[in-house]
Length: 103
Image (cartoon, rainbow, N blue to C red; front, top):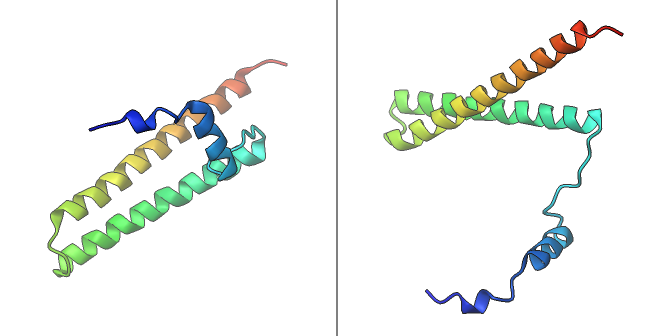
């Protein structure tokens, strides 16, 4: 495979292209931005759980015989749930640490 034609693609070019196409996210460390990010992550986890449950029901009813798609949907939902639980645990640990601080 010849990749010599890609020599003009630099990181500056990619950064400029991504900025022009609004592909990059501007850094916003405010509480509202973090909270909205967390809510969207929870919504995504909920959607993946619903998709896995829907795939299970379709498989149980015989509407789908593709076990591969079922396993993928269940794996995505499980990983998203594990990530959500890990983030929740870290938030609880941070809250406990803040509560133990003396002012």
